[in-house]
Length: 313
Image 1 (cartoon, rainbow, N blue to C red):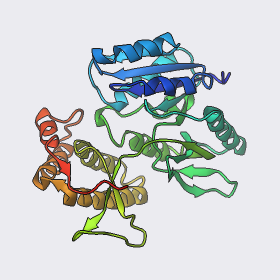
Image 2 (cartoon, rainbow, N blue to C red):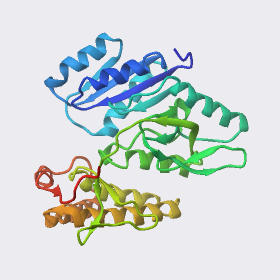
Image 3 (cartoon, helix red, strand yellow):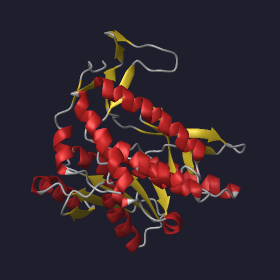
Image 4 (cartoon, helix red, strand yellow):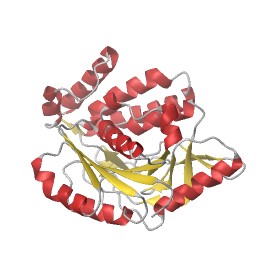
């Protein structure tokens, strides 16, 4: 046990046996684990019952309500039971020994400097370094941190609030991080700590049949499931509208990079017009303030889209 009042919140959707391995790796690092299942239905019962038998508290949402709702349900359950901090995880995040302790050590080191801070995350998420800058005292300041592996103190959550639920999925962690930064509570990274994770599927970046190899541009592009592009575009526009004044440079850079990625995805989508319709619908819904789950008709449209590129080896 950590003896620090730290609880883990693990979100699941249609979990497989890998969830149990993730919980086992966490069990001796936190005081309690809360598993929140996001409306998987009865087929998830065997895995969830095994998780409960192993000591986790299981919260089952009736409907698939999105990652923010699931996270908030687990965070509230932990705080209601007296947790002083929570660490959030995806169902497939398997941590190394000492992972939570490393987050706490990094947090305590920052506290000793008197520096205000927000979330604490591992320096590396898979092979992606989450550090944005290094302060004069060696503090690692992170940006674009992923919520899996994120340590959140009770005081932080009471100050800035929980995750924004109407985003449903995508940019939920980004919006939270921007909100913290706007409050003067930047994200901090634990030096050398890595959370192993499988990123999205990678495809060869090709033009005129040739793999593109240019300085600073990798020869592969990581593509999400096509339906995610509705949420990525809509939520990007919504987040930009909220934070462009407070965090102009951050928002401008992210928007440029994502626009380039959306263009890449459009070139690789088949049929392209279907992904273009998703983009247009996302922009329209952002303008109108239509949030939450994407309309069922758009979900059906997204299911017709595939990527016309060879998977990277």
